[in-house]
Length: 114
Image (spheres, rainbow, N blue to C red):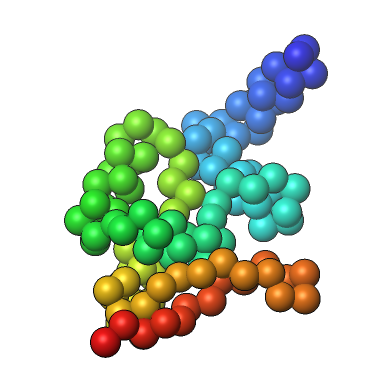
């Protein structure tokens, strides 16, 4: 535990007055390097949005709750959600299904509802 406290104190020193921004940058880099997962992938984010039957309004509410609580938001941006709704349609038109093909994790959109 002492090592963790020392590391955090050191990060505060090198982060300076921009400590919070600095820490977010560290978390993003850890996520990018796959050392620590702190954000949803595009597929995970879109799957969450669809399987939870979120609307744009309820999605914005979740994002604002993260922001107000000072919690790093792991979800996609609203623009990414809207762009993919424009491409794939609303959840009333398709179903999101998780698959594992050839040991590769993916999300597949299918079953058009007419």
